[in-house]
Structure formats: structure tokens, C-alpha cells
Length: 251
Image: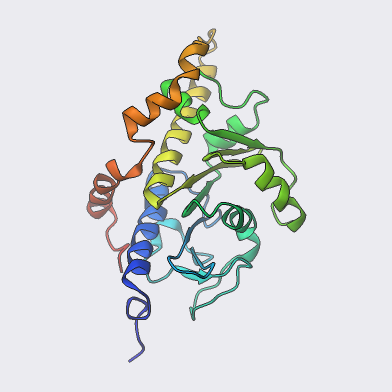
């Protein structure tokens, strides 16, 4: 009998796989997925630069811990898997993972609200409480076409700097997290800020910007309210929700 994936990896990697598969399914549950496109990647514990990513062609709601594919920084498989990967889709992720060893997870979406705001010249506006959390650590990167060009990587890294919210102009949203839970919570807030902005603009009335002193003090408030935007607070509840509506991610 062939050995299962769980028996081939460490306990730490298996736990990472379970959380990453859950994140994929939660992205689908909240409607941020784009069929089989976009990716969430996570660094595998250990000295090697190895990462987990979705099997290309799977819907996000189908992904399991065992189906995730382990790859290197070039997008090549480093563990046997019957599933294909999309090395070109890993271009953005590999650039960020190579430069930001402080983060474990990179989450990228093409949500309609996110793309809509990314196409606006002024980007995220300070018009909601959610937007303030985003603006406390937000970077922008101008569109250079479909992200397949290796030459774009240095500019992706330069524009990101040390931020954890990243708006790719005319393209979508990206978050970085010390954990998968952190990256997910940050994407939830990012998406909410964009949705609120699009709806507020659609109302046609004059928008009320939040006062600059409040914006300047938001970083300290973030630490107080969300423990530094730590996803650990919300993650157990999200997993319970997923267990009710779409179980099986831990297979």
C-alpha cells in the first residue's frame, strides 16, 4: 500500500497543511476565489526554502491537506505528487518569500472588490474603521502585465518593503502573515475595506474621510484591539465554521 502524505511529513508540516487547506476553503467560502486561479503559499518549517501551494486545476473548495504540493523557490516539486503546479503563478509568491523570511504565508486574491479599488488612482481611502487597519501597513505596486516576468521581482520586493497589506494595481490584493491565520484575517479586513469603499462610492454622496490624527494613531490601536492583527483569535472559530459547512480539508 502506498504511503500517505501524512506519514511522509513531519507533524509540523502536517499541521501547516491542514491550516493551509482550510485557508483555501475559507477563501472560497467567503467568495474571494477566482475559479482555479490565484494562490496561497506557506513556508514549510525547516532549513530548506520549501513551500506548500495548491494543486493547479483544483477549485479552492476542494483542496485538502494531502493534495497540497511541496515546491522550492523555482516552483519545482520537491516531493512526489500526482498533481500539477503552476510555476508561473508562483512568481509573485517566490519573490516575496525569498525577501521576507519573517513571514510564513502569502495570500493573493482577485476579488471583484479588491480589483475595483486597485484600479482607483487614490487606492484605499480612509473612510472606514477597516480601512484604517489596512492603511497602517499598506504598499502599492503598479501593474506590469500578467506576473510572469522574473525581471519584475525586484520591483515587487522594493515596493512591498516591510508592509503586510499589498495592493497590486489593476490586479488584486495580497497579504502577508506570520501564520496562515494572520494572512487570512488580514485579507478579511482588506476585502472588507474595499467592499465598503465600493459601496460607499456607489451611494453617490460625499464621503467623510477619517481625521488624520486618528489615522496616525491607528498602529497603536491595532495592537490593542486585535493583538497586532493576530489571526489566532479568530482562527479556531473559522475552523469550526468550516467543519460545519465544508469538512474534509484535513484529509
